[in-house]
Image (cartoon, rainbow, N blue to C red; front, side, top):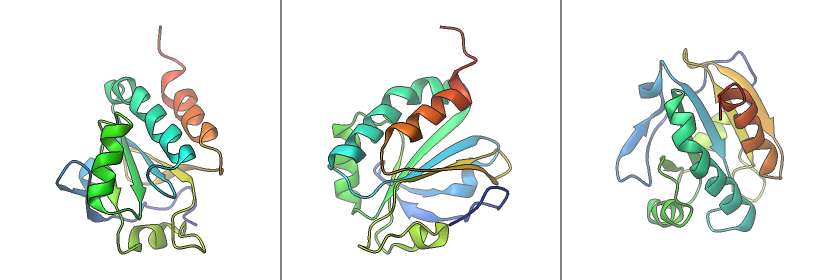
Length: 149
């Protein structure tokens, strides 16, 4: 698995937004890059919905959110709409992104891992937990806890 301090591997892949996303195009911003096992499963829906709720505040702080799973583009688009996620969900259909980050699980789906990437493109922090809560809770503490209500 990619460790903190390492340059985040770049990728160029299709998204739920109907266009490709090149990770390096987000340089200059902090990025929450979260991998989840499968669209439309309970934990993944909970995580994506919560990131969807947080996204307006995160975006206002200059933080981008990108979700990645091995699901097809059409499924990612439907899942984004269902979870009200206004950020891109990447379709890693060839599983190369998950492999490059070291998060491809034994069943051919991504493990639930979140990479917090700094504006220079380096991994600043990694959260790994099967439960979705620690991933979104860390985002709140890292980027939103200093905000005034």
